[in-house]
Length: 64
Image (cartoon, rainbow, N blue to C red):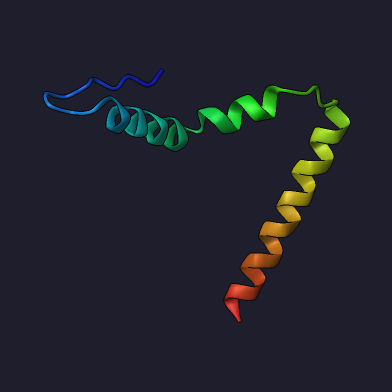
């Protein structure tokens, strides 16, 4: 969980901006979006293999 203390003489907008930045850094919003819809295990496996293939292609390109 992300906590942000409002500093002395700090505007609430600045603290809110820091809070949003911390949430983004921790991947909270990404996790919420991922959990919004149900994804069957077969689809998860398919996406996982596609991402692995994409990573392999990227590493091959970088080597040359």
